[in-house]
Amino acid sequence: MNISCQSFIFIKSPPRVYPVCLLLTAIHVTKIIESLLFALTVYTAGVVPPVILGFYKDKFRLNKYGAMAGLLIGCSSALILKYMMLNRYLIYIFPVVCVMIFLVSRLVNGIAHKPW
Image 1 (spheres, rainbow, N blue to C red):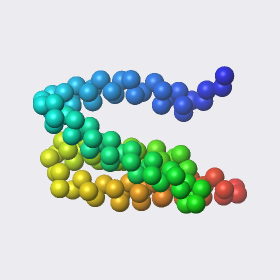
Image 2: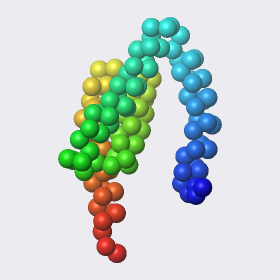
Image 3: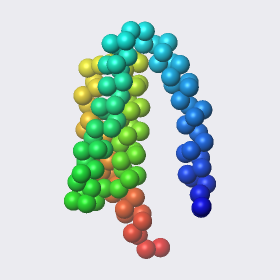
Image 4: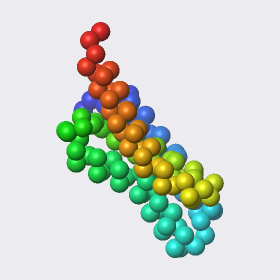
């Protein structure tokens, strides 16, 4: 089994980050319905655009790096906007996530196919 250094870093670091994020969320959100809406907001902003654009990945030449960038940008920006109570700006996450998916996919495709 060949495991690269990059995949090892991604496997090891999230278990340290998750408990801190969960603790902050538990302190910030005290009601059940509020916590469900919070989870739905983060899920919708981070997961839905990469999944929908994933159906058209061959047509738009998208790759997994663009999807991961969209997922990270969408979830983190939704978390930040929710914690700062800027709910009226949450709708602007979707275009930003879509642009990031296309941008990162194009950059990675351009770097991968560029002859050195």
